[in-house]
Amino acid sequence: MKKIIICILMLLACNVYAQRLTYHENIATEDKLKSVLSYLSDDYAEGRASGTKGKQYVERYLVEKFKEFGLKPYKWNYTQSFNFNDSIAVRNVVGIVTAQKFTDEYIVVCAHYDHLGTIRGNVYNGADDNASGVAALLEIAEIFAQMRKDGNGPSKNIIFAALDGKELSLAGSEYFVNTLSIPKSKISCAVNLDILGTTLVPPGRRKDYLIVLGNNTLPESKREIVEHCNRLPRFMMDVRFDFYGSRDFTKLMLSNGDHTSFSKMGIPVLFFTSGFHEYTYKTTDDMEIIDFDVLLKRTRLIFNIINRL
Image 1 (cartoon, rainbow, N blue to C red):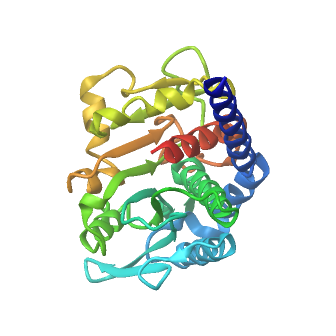
Image 2: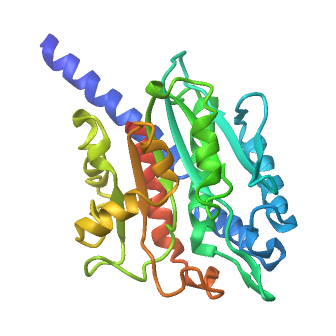
């Protein structure tokens, strides 16, 4: 009888936890994703090239969002500033959600917010590349910040980094890892969100897909987390762990993004993307190509994965 009662109590506890998790997960909405994407990919932002007024406009917006959610500044400041090639001002926007109980372990969640800017009078708005990844990052940051306020915060500290200078040879992420204020051994995973919003190039027949690279860099005990979370009935996405079945392209993608700066330091990485398409690096990369229903589903799944990590 005692064993039965314990089992019932455990099931009830699990059910309450699942309900809380779903409640917080639903903080992410299509409307908020659209709002962020609209702001970042508006012509007023001038394509968000590093060092431009348009990029600074978006930078201030991101700082205000971090403050609004209640993220704490990283290293006493929400921005990291440096000059690329002694000329272009680059500024990462970084905030942190501290663990509910003290720990010296961290997870980093990053997405670059810079893009190509305005070239010969043509604005490259970069809605998918990478306003989509930044929109997802902000939603996930808000969820974890609210969980922290509600007393259900993460068991690790989570650093959220909106990185500048990706289009300048990964300058922002390289600066971030080279100026870490914590031992790299204390970062259990760096999660990178880049080009996350379309369903234009599915690796299979389904449009609700997600490409996840770097899973094999995780400790063996954590390599089932992505699939475990995806098995929840509300997800069940077509998750692929390679880049369109090509070993060479998978290797290339793992060595060509902000996650690369972390993996070079021996930090495990997970790179989430929906793949390149005909609008990538073109002036036609606008909000119209974003599938917000699937982007929301991806955002919520990635939140669950980070929460399990």
